[in-house]
Amino acid sequence: MSQLKKKITRIITSLILLVMLIPSTAALADAGYTYNYDFWEEVQQSPDAYSVKATLTNIELGIEKKMSNASSLFVRDNMIYVCDSGNNRIIQLKFENDVYTVERIIEEISGSEVTTFNNPTDIFVAKDGHIFIADQNNSRILKLDNELNTVLEFVKPVDDNFEAGVTFLPQKIVVDDAGRVYAIVSHVNKGIVKYEPDGEFVGFIGATPVKYSWYEYIWKEYLMTKAQRAQTENFVPTEYDNISLDEKGFMYVVTTNFDEAELMTDSALPIRKLNSLGNDILIKNGNFPPVGDIDWDNAGGYTGSSKLIDITVMDNDTYFAVDKTRGRIFGYDDQGHLLYAFGGNGNKDGYFRNPTSIEHMGKDLLVLDSIDGQITVFTPTEFGSMIFNALDAYDSGDYDLSADIWQKVLMFNGNYDLAYIGIGRAKLRQGQYKEAMHYFETKYDDDNYAKAFQLYRKEWVEDHIGIIFVVFFLVLLIPLGIGRLKRVRKEVEKYEYEMETVFKRKR
Image (cartoon, rainbow, N blue to C red; front, side, top):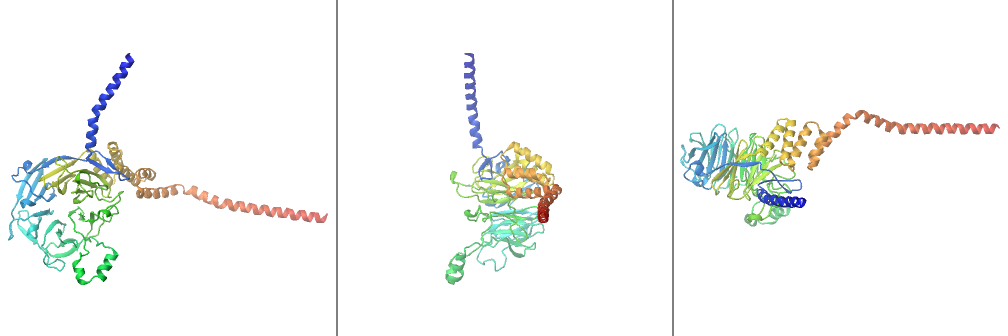
C-alpha cells in the first residue's frame, strides 16, 4: 500500500506542476516579442535584446499641449529634438542624470520675414551647433544659430530640373560636416536635393534606377505619338521616405515605394547606403537582404511586407529601421545580418500605433509615435549588450574576446545563428581555419566557409610541403624505375636468348 500511495502522490504532484506550468508556457508563447530568422527563413524566438526604459509624453514631460502628428526625432549628444509638426513647434529635451526634461520649446525664430513654422517635418543639429529645420509648408529649409537667429534659408532652386508649378516641400534633411545640405523633397523623384553651404543648388544624388521592360520602352519611344506620350506616366525613379547620416558621412536612405515581388531578389532595395557619388554600397552578406520581415501574412488585419519608414545608424555601423506596417524594429550589423526584430502594433509599452521616426542615444533607441504623441526609449538587455560587445570586440581586433562573448550569447540562445558565424569569423581571424569551417558549416555560411577552406588548404599545403614533394617524386620516379627495370629485364632475357641460340648452333 505504501508503494501505491507513493506512486499516486508522484502522479498528483506531476499534474499539479503541469498545471502550474501551463500559464507560464502560454505567457512565453504570447511574449514572442523578439525574434530572428534562421537559414531556412523560419522564425526563431529570441530573448529580448531591448527593454522599455521610459515612455515620454506631454504628461511625463510636464508640457500642457499633447504632441500632434509628430514626425521626426533627432539626437545630438544629450539633447533630443522632436518635430511636433501638428503644433508647429520643436521640442528640445535634455537627458541628464537619467532624467528627461524639457530644455526649451521652439515656436518662433528671429531674422526672417516669417518667424513661425508651418508643419516642420525634420530637424538636424550640426556639430557646430547650427540648427537646420525642414519648414515644409513655408517651402524652406532654415539654418539657425543656437539663439534661433536665421542664418540662411534654403529655398526652391531656380532650375530646369524643378517644375515651375510644383510647390517646394522639403520633407527630410541631413547636413554633412562641410555644411552641405541634403534634402528629400516631396514630389521630387530625381534623387536627393543637394545644396552647398551658401545655399546654392548643385544637383541631385542617389536617384533610384529607372525600371521598365524593353517592350514598354519601345512602345513609348517609337510607337506612341507625342500626345499619347504626354498622357502616359513617365518612367521616373521613386521617392525616398527618410535619410540618416552615419559618423563617416555616408547617407542611409529608406523607401517604401517598391514592388513586393522584388524584395527577396534584392531588387527592391528598401535600405540603401549612399556614398558621395550617390552609389549604393550597403554590404549584404546575410542569408537574405535587409528588408524587414521576410515572411508576411494578413494576420491581425495588417497586410503586405514591411515598410521601413526611418533608419538610424550607430557608431559601430549597426543600423536599425522601424516598420510602419506592423510597428517592428529591425536591427542589422555592418555585414547585413539581421541581429533581431522586436516590437509590434498595440497600445502597451514597447508597441506602437504609428511609428514615424527612430533615433539612438548611445546604444539606447528612441521611437516616436505620431498617434500617441509619445517617445518610447529602449535600452539593451544583458543579451542585447553582449551582442554589441561581441561586435565591438571583433571590430577592435580582439578576436579572442569576441569569440568568448559569442559563446556566452549561445548560453542565452543556442539557436542564435550570428553567434556561430561570429565565432567562426573570430576563429578565421585567429588563423584557426579548421575550427572556423566547423562553425560556418553549422549555420550554412557558404561564403565564409569557402574563405576558411581556402586558407585551411593553403596552410595544410605549407605544413606538408616536404611530404608532398616526397610523394610527388615517388609517384613520378616509381613508374620510371619500374619501366627501367622492365627494359633491363627484357634486355637480359634477350641477351640470354641470343646466347642460348649461339650455343645451340655451335653444337
